[in-house]
Image (cartoon, one colour):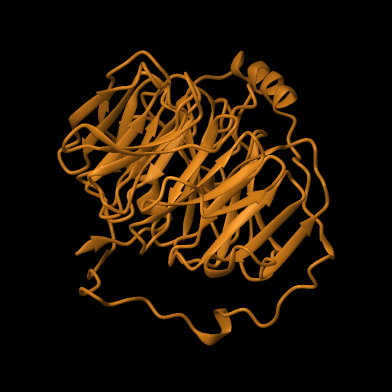
Length: 394
């Protein structure tokens, strides 16, 4: 049995454990494909945690390499990480032997995105600040494909069959991974919006939508089939314009995003309805955020590593787990009907909230009232905290 995620269940997440190994901000976190291990990266160390016991299993010092990003390979005993101190090579570290099994050189500037291909233990992709995306194979130290993009982002779909890439804030292209040397299968062109740079691109676990995070106080989703705009998720504070992480829940129903002052915002993915704002032990902006792909828990980090789980005494709906090999089937209506006209520009909304003005207004209200609001769904009009809908600690 497992918990069915709904609005009430998402509001009942609380801090289960807090850890701190270094005094540096975490730059990347990622769960292994089976959800049993958690990888954390900062410029001083790579740390591996047990997701079940929520304790550190091992730590590898990184002062010689100063990585900006890291990820698991399809073999959970190996980790990929970038290098920014002496060169910009990507290194593959075997956690069992603590030895490097291969070094991949090619980027002329630092790498900001690494991802292994689902279902293929040999292939991974990297995106760098040199405006290049490289496809790599562990069986060779040279790249197998190179795609040139301006300020690129990239992501594999959950099945590992297609690759999404972006160019600035203008375009998303969908590539068949078997034909990267040819023209993309689809190209979605958007009206340029210079007010918010795209900082993160990811597929929903069901493969139907793409989520784009920005350095503004909003993120949004588009259809993975035709590129049309779906929903905007906004209302949180990002005063320093940091690339704050967002993440889907494993069932693709909810989207979580980090925000200033340790807050985590939760929305429904289909209609953008704000479900709750959680406040944990993080004191700065929540830069990294990941939901466990196999368990009802997620992790957030700034300087601290915070494990979140539902309250033990909460009231939940329960559902039987899928049997081994069983998958969820979707209706034919969910499939794409036809390809979009590739060159037509798709309108996207602009960020609507001036967070500086909002903060000034809310600070004035603080002088007259105290306390905090439980959540947005009860229709309360008393607004006395920085973020509407905040759930207080129990």
